[in-house]
Image (cartoon, rainbow, N blue to C red):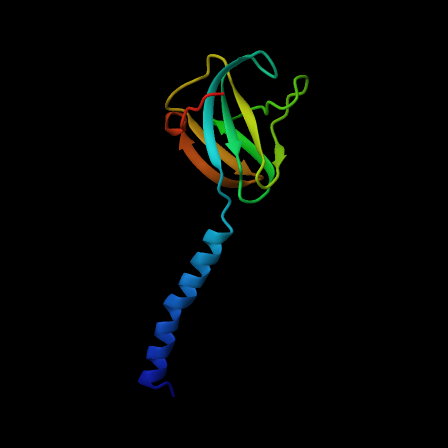
Length: 130
C-alpha cells in the first residue's frame, strides 16, 4: 500500500520530468535569423522583395518558405526554379516574392519537410540592406 510519503515523493517528481522534457525540446528546436530585403531581380522570377534565412542552429533538410500559402522559389541558381532546399547548420538562403504579390499582412511560414518551424507576418520581418 502506498503511504502518504510515497505519494508526495511521486508527486514531487512529476514537475522534474516535465521540466526535463521541456528543456530537451527547447535545446533541439531549430532557430535562425529571418530577414527581408528589397532588391530587383528578373530570375528565377520577376521580383522586388526577398526573404533571407540565415545561420540555423541545425540543418534544415527540406526547407520551404510559403507566402500566403504559395511556395516561394529559392534564389540560388539563375536558370533553375526550385522550392525546396537543404540548408546546413550555420548556412543560409534567399527566396523571392513575385512582383505585385507583396502585401504587408501576408503570412510567412517556414517549414522543414512537413514540420512548421516559424510563422510570421511579412511586416514583422526586419528589413535589412541587401
